Image 1 (cartoon, rainbow, N blue to C red):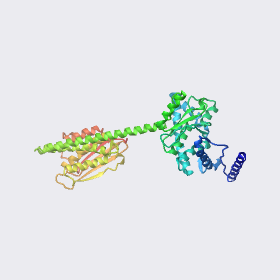
Image 2 (cartoon, rainbow, N blue to C red; image 1 turned 30 degrees about the vertical axis):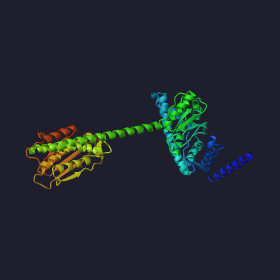
Image 3 (spheres, one colour; image 1 turned 60 degrees about the horizontal axis):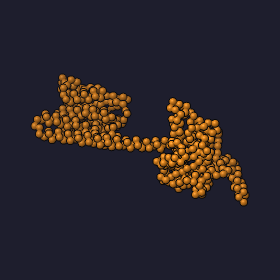
Length: 478
């Protein structure tokens, strides 16, 4: 009776294949099961066989269009050994200076990463295409799909516990791994496990199915003379525990874990370290700003005891310089990036500070600061620039408009490929006759020249229809 049922099933397959051939397609049929599973998982995988078999019913190839399609999806046919023995030997040649072990690790990590991502994406697409919802159906389709696409036959061992949590553990053989077969057929023997893409693809598929990070390690390999290609799959933070147990039982040397998750862990640590550094720097900038404000407040209190107007003016100028420095640290404290300041925003803040300090809000300030790539301006340049602007604007507010209530100040910022240009001008009374701005002994101008030198820049000062400062200094984007 069983033989009769098998015969009927085979006749149905042949009739279906004949019909597909008439339609211009063909089908991929299997002569037996594609997965060996423990008894408790047999029903699940029997159902998966039907699901995946249905997916592979429609297969067509058209070399005139360079096209291979399965169920409406494009596939690419590749020679197996070019992704195994051929690839690893080429990597060994390219990195001969690093030694065979290091070259193998470079090739292995590359193949594992690619295969893991392909496994993730193939699983996602297959789940959507076949309408799979629950994690067990999603995962069980993986080994069957794996076999249909020529990677390997899968033999899941009884001790496996594929649960969607930290306890996930899968131990399995790949009796016909394309990677091990490629090495054996080449007549070469490897010192290391070679079924790298098998590890990456299968762990990628299972990760996508259960929604938890997974990695897989080959613990024995036919390509190196072992009886079987055997793998352990588990969450990355648990894999070492399982491998250690495996090694102690079988008296085997420590296993190498593919670096896909190690790299992810390293990236997370770097991100965390950068975040901690940013928090620390923000706190430093916050404290510096507060300390500068305390100094400014002390100067303000002290100035209340001064009777000499000239001394009071000097105290106010010093206060404004300190506040300008504090502004930088305030901007950095509030910024997402603690190493750079938005120069346009910084300049407008300095203007607001000084116009209020000198009670000259009625003086119109025209801005031309449309330079987007200076939103992230180096702090080492921003501080001297801010102090220069502070000195120039302070002089303008103090001296340019002694009898005018409608004066104007213009601030222009330009950026070329390798330099920054500031032009600050006013329509005030200009500088006194015979005044040599380059040889003046006033503190403000001395400070300006010193800061320009710090920037490796140049400054030109002219006095025609007001006063104009033209500052240039080298600057390239980071």
